Length: 107
Image (cartoon, rainbow, N blue to C red):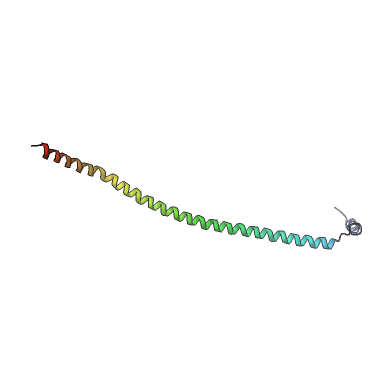
């Protein structure tokens, strides 16, 4: 670690040879640090905003899929009802055809 005298000597050398001002540099670094912190805060806020918008969109999509699921359930129920009644209807049609056959050719 550098001693205080060495650091002071280095600061004076930089000021004399390179027109370097440590207070200005420190102030500049503080401003840059604040700008970076502010930028990071803005990015984090933007990410949080996008996340909330995406969640809202996903909620809308979930609602739409739920509506579609309900419609498919209704269609499935109708098809099941038709499937259950087909043997009964075929039985009645068969009986009607046998009766018609008997009426026509049974004499």
